[in-house]
Picture 1 (tube, rainbow, N blue to C red):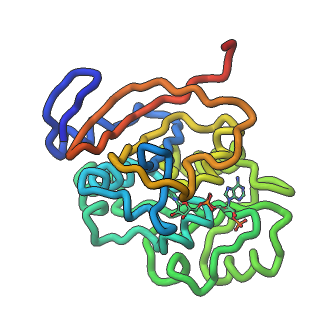
Picture 2 (picture 1 turned 120 degrees about the horizontal axis):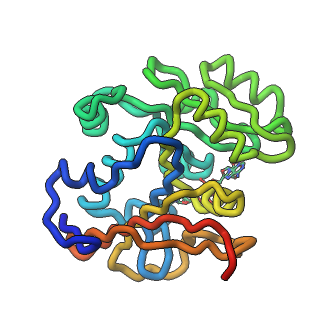
Length: 247
Ligand SMILES: NC(=O)c1ccc[n+]([C@@H]2O[C@H](COP(=O)([O-])OP(=O)(O)OC[C@H]3O[C@@H](n4cnc5c(N)ncnc54)[C@H](OP(=O)(O)O)[C@@H]3O)[C@@H](O)[C@H]2O)c1
């Protein structure tokens, strides 16, 4: 891995961690991989775009996170489970002086997490959290609570993302890494809660597929390039999201 911006240098594993470290305080960073034409999937999953370098960045962002936020669609499509306490990420976390695991926080208006699915139950050190809203079916919510899911109700008809992040921060989950998907990114941008986009840009053209942000945003999100890394033709851009202001 090499850094192209701001100061060109080779990066070893420790250097890659430093390249993505956040200052103390609250932050929501969003991690995505996309092709040059903005596709985030090949045949419905992001795997077709990935590379070893992208996996390394993904692992670093998980290692640095207090919690991993994900939309219910992505959790289902990508087969999410709880973070394992015996994995590359958990070993990185321990080496960084952090708890071995962090919770997976699934955002779902309908509380659609499967109470008997991979994300639920077991003896996970960090139980899954489901962020939902009052409008979600009460039986579904109760079934999740009974299955050991921590259900956070934030908002009435829809999930109130600023409130959800507030509630997570109150529990000590300040650095949140969001792993998508596009619908969640869209609402997080519209809600003005995204601080950073960590985008892996795959040197590929896919056509069709699920776009990074599907429907038009209420307002264009303006980003500022903070850092650019490269490995095997894959670019790893770290953008900060600018406060909305005069254009
Ligand atoms: N390339 C990448 O880096 C990347 C990353 C992530 C995902 N993906 C791909 O994206 C696809 C999934 O796309 P998607 O847009 O459906 O994913 P998504 O945003 O993960 O999931 C959409 C679902 O999540 C819930 N949700 C999202 N935002 C919400 C909000 N603000 N409030 C309440 N609920 C919210 C809703 O669940 P309920 O219906 O349960 O209410 C909604 O139906 C998959 O194919 C996946 O592989 C690619």
